[in-house]
Length: 196
Image (cartoon, rainbow, N blue to C red; front, side):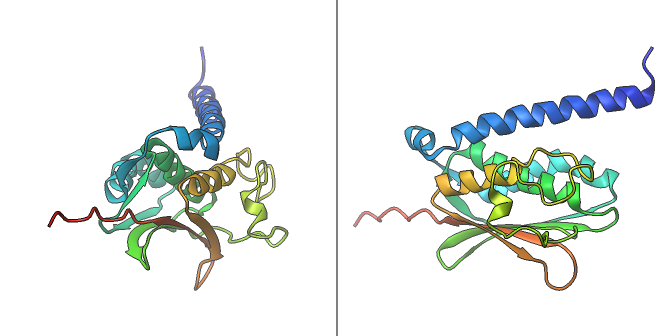
């Protein structure tokens, strides 16, 4: 008979294995050559973020995190499943590294012709031993290997997804205080010409 602790460990191992398989599959599909052959569709980022809130609210509440969602109507042309994976990776990363009892905020808005999606956490901030560009390389970990589980694929995958959508992914230290802000800039779809 398994103990409750053993069942929890099995569940965590299964979740991590499933996450790894999903990330590897998405990483191969996010390759620009593969993304180009798949049809684009208009994706409502507000709806996507709101629907994903349910996915993360339980994990955030276990750590007593204040999970803020401030999204304005914003749409992009893209692959909805890849954009869902993008948001998932950024939010999962934030939950992993944010200490208990602090805040994670997801925002989306339109600014300067771009849809801007940001995930801000109150984690340890940017690692001093890595440049921001190095954070997006596969198998790169920002923290000590034993501190937080991960394979170093999430941010590399996020970067590839953003590039496949013609966008930019930026990272910056949160101001003021500890933490990090990951900002995704994606082109806003052009409005169709009105019939005259």
